[in-house]
Length: 123
Image 1 (spheres, helix red, strand yellow):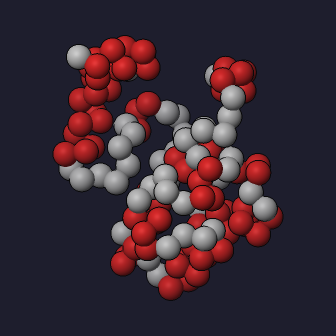
Image 2: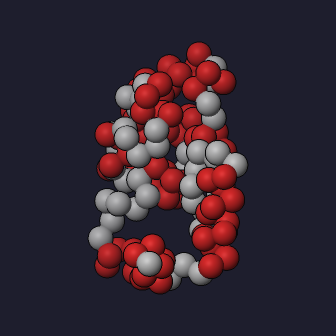
């Protein structure tokens, strides 16, 4: 019942829940439904560490990712910062990987560094 109330509070519908459960059942590393946002989905972010090239791993080192933090989204310290707060070299590394500012803020930071007022103003 608690889940039901949390879902209502978030404004998610039953169809959104079904999409989320399908993603989790398919062992998708990204538990968010692509239909919940208009931000392009960064497929490369959910690439298995073993499938990354040595160049990609070197770039991830600039972002201070390790096997552990790359494989567990939300655990890297760099993800606590919005794109505009990243130092120039880290921002450049994120862009080299293919992140845009919107993708970073949505899929890496999950807008956690934004205030409710900023989110409201951005829609």
